[in-house]
Length: 170
Image (cartoon, rainbow, N blue to C red; front, side, top):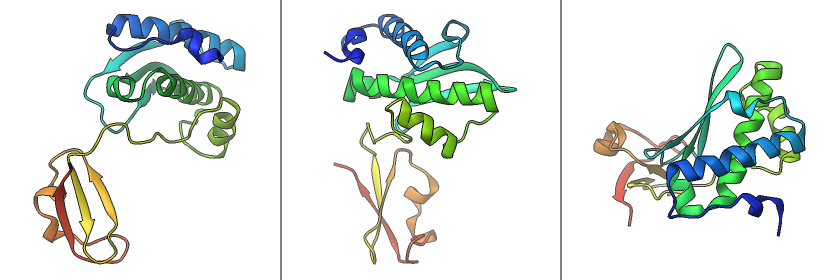
């Protein structure tokens, strides 16, 4: 059993149970990796709306304030994906506090490697639409009925300049 599994929770559980496990895991991850993050000073919350972003760090004046995690990530990919996202957001919190840097730049990439977490998340919710180039077949996932989805003829492919069409995701 690896360290992540000690903290594992699984659906169905309440947001409160989920966040309790997340806080305990985060506190131990901070200690284990010597991060300068006060887990108890952070607000932890769940987003039931997020479809593309697994987690987000909110901060002000180089002070980490909140980490919000996507409930759909937990439902669709489970605890291991959440634990990786927690480490990812803790890396941001550490770098914001230490260097005022919230980017995914070289410093973040080195820390993400040390924390064994990805620099960007995999898709965890299927898109509602795919915008597809008729020439190069490049596909863009879309989660909202944006102007591009409603009027693809007003736009051209950013890769080849080709015509775009919209397909409902199945």
